[in-house]
Image (cartoon, rainbow, N blue to C red):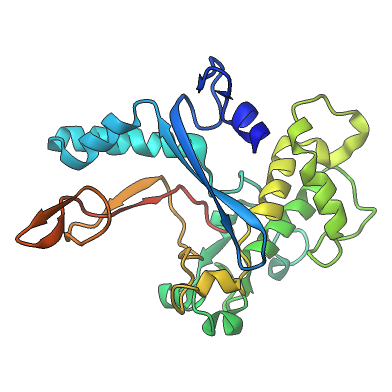
Length: 286
């Protein structure tokens, strides 16, 4: 945790100020941390960061004029794009249902999402087992061929390796990639800025390594986990989600009670704010 604060957040533990070089969250005014024991008896930490300029952005977003709210939403979305990412880089795939020799295309050109009800069912603790993560379908096939996001990613890795004439392993699938190999390929990501020798083949491509990193750490299991359903029968992370062309800040226009900037009126607690949700930019298949 000390390394995380010192190196990644760029916080000076001696002066208790943000360093000149910006960290992954930008300039930080202050931070707080609390440790929590999980069900599996391991600890994890929750952090709260105060980012320079974010308080004004939040104020304008909630209480400013229409123009100020618009500008604040734009600034907030821009910041979200800098510090978080929900999409894979652009890659090309050859769908197996299209046959040999078909042109490799971007996923958005050859696959589309299933209907919204199926996406919703894929979040349910029982229905998700029937769907098996297959939430993408071929646009061309008369009998829809369904794919999981992991299968689409594996098709992209297979395309990259074949484009670099590395076919010694045969077709790349989730079954024939050893978990240990994927671990090594991703755990070395802090050194990806170093020059790589020519013998690295297709792994020399920065987008390939970024894709492997997302595949290893960011893919949500289509069967979910026990923690997904601790607040109900639907995944509390609201996954899977639909594709999103750009990051949006969605505001619930109906006033609801929630614990933030509360005031007491006539003996009851009322809120001045409506809850909001950040919907990050998300490519199809991500």
